[in-house]
Image (tube, rainbow, N blue to C red; front, top):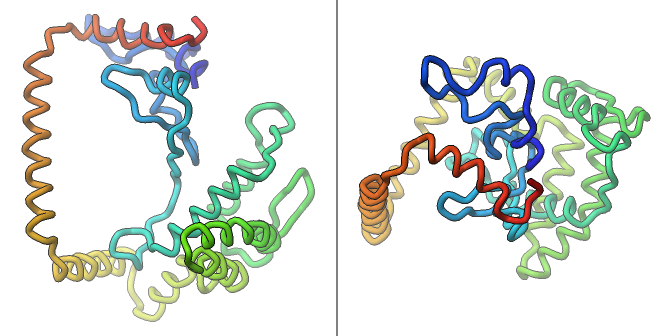
Length: 267
């Protein structure tokens, strides 16, 4: 991440940072800021005021991981079901604990990206073949293998929280890997065919149904007041911050870039 936000890129250098005396980009590097690093999973840490994310990570390590590229569950009022959350907990623990060798080329792995693209575009194709270390492997077989290896981690989470719901969430995914019609995409296709509805009409109706369901369960007066107080305090903090700001944008940008070299990071 540090290299990406400090390494110039020729195309961006040709554009420059100013046009007609106005800023058009913060710098000419591969990434202008750390948050432009788009990945399925990103290492994160809460930053202090005016602190660069790379600096915070270098000083205090990874605080949490941000999981991206998750589809919205159209059958859940809040976009993701508790069962899915428990499965993700087990999956992330599995990923963090299992051996994770470097990609053969020491960097970006084309095979991994190709597999990702295939699943995104053809994941429901019967008998879909992926590639594992240049060896063909069926999507279903690979999924079931990973799910089987996750069993101990789901059991550990269940022991820690005195429940059986992590193992149950794993069983749900095994059923979906074995019977694709049980996946969210399978259920959605079935609903569209059953109701003879377009995707737009169906999802709009789902949204309206979810809205109505949530409105029937209003927040308590205490929680509503807490949210109102939070909004008021947020606006007050914003006003105080803006009123105390006497720094020019040029000076801010210079300080923003210099922050990367003040925390033991390579110059």
